[in-house]
Amino acid sequence: MRGKKLYINTIGCQMNVYDSGKMADMLYRANYQLTDAVSDADLVIVNTCAIREKAVQKVYSFLGRIKKLKQKNPGLRLVVAGCVAQQQGRAIASRFPQVDIVLGTHAVQQLPDLIQELEKHPRQIIATEMTDFIDEPGPADFSCAGLSASRDGIISDFVTIMRGCDNFCTYCVVPYVRGREISRQPQAIIAEIESLVQAGIREITLLGQNVNSYGIKENLTSFPDLLAMVNAVTGLERIRFVTSHPKDLSDALIEAFGTLDKLCNHIHLPVQSGSSRILKKMNRKYTRESYLEKIEKLRAVSPDIAITSDFIVGFPGETDQDFQETMDLIDRVGFDSVFAFEYSDRPEAPASRFKDKISPEIKHERLQALFKRQKEITRRLHEALVGRRFSVLIEGASKNQIKHTADADAVELTGRTSENRIVNFKAPADWGIDIDRRKGETKGVKIEAAYSNSFWGVVADRPEMR
Ligand code: SF4
Image (cartoon, rainbow, N blue to C red; front, side, top):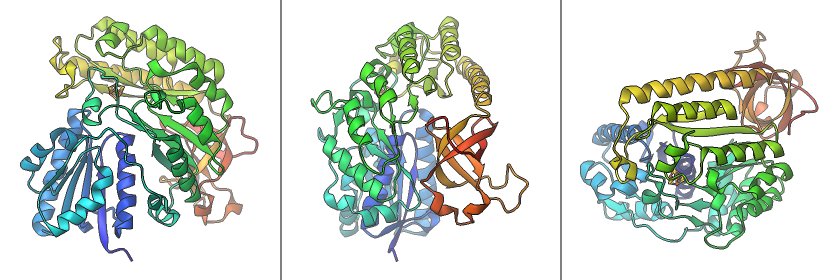
């Protein structure tokens, strides 16, 4: 029986999801059990994101909610972690006296010690010092008992391979709040992956702000060579990675999609804009043409590869012509799906001082036009997949049970293809009702119906797609 309850609110990118997982693991060993109900918690962590104004507002409103809970339960402890914590440090502690610990992006490993310190001497603690090394977890952090228990039922997990960024895109605060690029030792990464596989994980996503430049600065193994090492881990089924900077997508990495059997047939390659003029203002260091060339090379190696991307619309100075170039690039590439956002000023980021800001109305209009175009492309791509057979890694019971079948006793499962597409399907009758044991298995599924965000299928032999 665990002693204390921990609630984590994670806002933002997968790096934050990873850090939240690490905090949950560390605190599990300190006798904390995760809860879904914030009102039950003894300790609340909000892991914050500073990338857009909306995400920062979310943090402030959450802190307001916790203030009320603390009035009812003065023993409740509150930690603010992540990019807003790093960026605002002492200011967030002064503005929100309900905060007990401000945990910067380089201080995650210190959390259990800081909580102990807080219990001994209650006061606000600010831990936002930046370091130029990565705290490697010790052997005790890889205890399989702890990992299995804290990751019960999960088959897919993240592993950070590097931290920070050296690119200084003009709209982005990451280099200021996460620091400069630094890569982990390949042996430590492999050891962590082996432990996760022993704890039941089947799919690993390698994480970094720019994984393509992994190890270059430290003269370590190259990223494609690291992928080959991960590919050799026994028991691991699938490998994914995010995020890739297009300028650093090497031919060797493109080749890896043709040679590594566990590397998933999907790449997230954020382009941000289809206009070379805007890309230059963003300091992205590639052009529309060089981006399209890399897409061509990827498709030459893996014709069915799923490609997803990120866009910022309404960057300062973006003309109608620039936006049309973005729409044209979307048509040419045929992305599986995209994330797109209206540009917003971030304090510290150079673009906040750029002139020629685009009005909120135009930004909104362009974003809606982009979503509409992408929706049509996704629909066409999805419809073309009906009748094809994919390997699906089963994640568990579908949340939308009995949506697709009239059979009241049918159990619906959900999983993902190598291309990261969600597929729901009916469990064959001879699988019984204990479907939990199917989690982590890979099955062939024939697609019968396509929707905007998922597919419906039936179990089929001999998937044509890995
Ligand atoms: S590559 Fe650019 S957008 Fe990505 S984290 Fe680095 S500075 Fe930010």
